[in-house]
Image 1 (cartoon, rainbow, N blue to C red):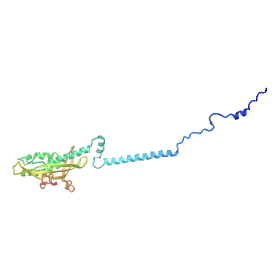
Image 2 (image 1 turned 60 degrees about the horizontal axis):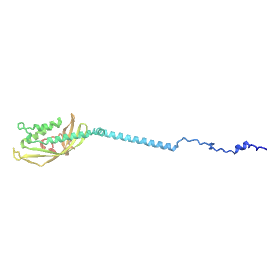
Image 3 (image 1 turned 30 degrees about the horizontal axis):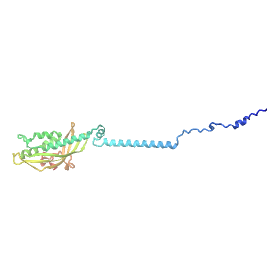
Image 4 (image 1 turned 180 degrees about the vertical axis):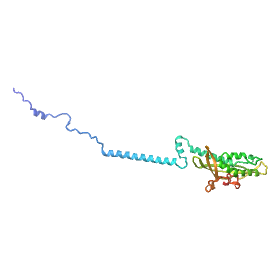
Length: 253
């Protein structure tokens, strides 16, 4: 019996189809980022850098304006924002307090301060001179206090005062200008030697006090009635015998 012929090897190879995946073509990965994305990121970083520079420049400008604001107080405001204390406000309070003390002391006097032998008011002088500069003390002793002492000695006048308000108009490291408003009242004995007094009408005043910081303490260096301050800002405040009392606030009625 004849055996079947073996399949032709060439036909076998042609009829077999591989069952695995087709790896005849493999796509290579693309590593390059799109050009548009790179450009967009660069623009964003560039804009951010410009904004940062603008902000820094603005802060530098504002800082310079604050520190060099012409009053010498700018740096104090900057440091107080971080320290929690306001040194400038403290200086204002001290200056206002001294200006108030000056107004109270210079416009409070009477027979109880008068020394009968000398005809002077030593306590009055002492109180006022404790809050003024040496320059102002000279004017006060020459022109202000003699009038007050003469008024008390001759008429027995008693003067009292009330302060309504005080505010700082300008201040730097060693000078300040304070505006003070109030009124004084003169009372006269019903008759000479009487202890019964007739009280007059309160007379308002408003004046500008020039102050100097000496030895760490604010002192009055000059004062001028507010309505005259613009034309006589350097006046000593001593109005002489033509005032209504002691070279103080009489001129600011």
